Length: 505
Image 1 (cartoon, rainbow, N blue to C red):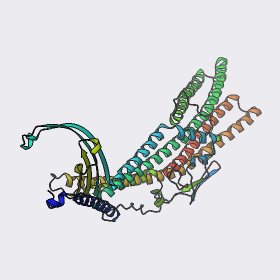
Image 2: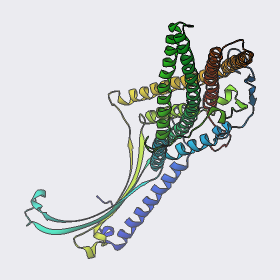
Image 3: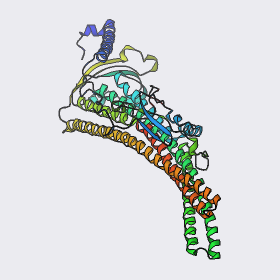
Image 4: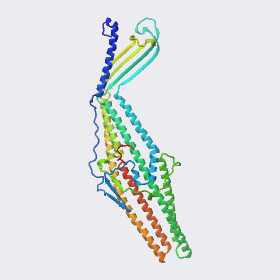
């Protein structure tokens, strides 16, 4: 009930005074909102701090050599080397460059990851709306039958139209920083999705390069195997002639036929692998297998990068996308503790509203139908059956789990780098041994050919030595392909390219 005297309530100035008080109240509400938003305040819950890098200066127990040399080609780890996002161009192969570009353009996994990043960014923008007042408006029209009997009056019922127009504004004061922690968590989730996209890019790039290297190696192995089959077939023919002439046992023919069949059995396996590699390349490029065309590539067309990046351990956790993603998820879990803590504390909501009502549209703005209200509400949870308390405990447990997951991700990253460095060292040793074996087989064949021209050995020995040379070539191809693929693994283990500085691909 109004506290104004009856005379003042009936005075025209009373209405104007009420409107002035309403305007002052609305101004006070807006000022309160601006002040609450501008105050630094406190945000409950822990302030997130990036985990410190592991305090080690090497990835391996024994310090890795700086240079890996084999087959006349050396690879050197160089500190401070800049690696750009298109790291695969270091292999100097146009077919690889084109295949990676096709995959980055049409890959469905990347499309999904990019859409997820856009969704996370939109969710962050939507969540930031909690910092602004909520304004609403409502308009309505209804036809009503009013029965005064409900209030004890025996006046006849009346039927009338009611037109209403109202507006409201409210603002939840972020007294404890719960809203700030909520938006902080959304931002961390967005960052996690961005690093997940970077990890997807790196995985696709590595898969394309590895697949092309493997396919090139299988092609070269198929060519060498077919040449070996031709040599064994010639040995079978000569052995059969000797068996018919009685100068050799037929068992030698059977042995050679078995060797020929064994070699021929390896061809379908190699051809199957090449076909499956072509299907994988098509899938990575977002095409159906029937639509894809894989390049015909030899290992000799792929250049082994001579200079490799050398990264110190403290840098690895700042450039690998999977580690950065785990860090962002840890940040989000930290913000979740603040949100759960703020939910346990009192909250304040400021609101104001006003409306117009009339039985006719023409008189909708009349003073008699004007109404307004101002309110400040304080709500505090008193008893929730442990819901809020254990909700905060659950948020703390989630943070502990994310912290353990981050630690495991870092351990796995360091182990992967160490494994690749070991692999490059041992690849060089294996390829060096295979190179010596290949050179010995070539020299043995050269000497036998000289003896054959001198008439001291027969042609069958030439064929056997030539077959051994092809076997050495196949072993060398496998060792060379492994060295190339482990080089790809090093780029992937170090996080791909990080020299462009924009964090995007």
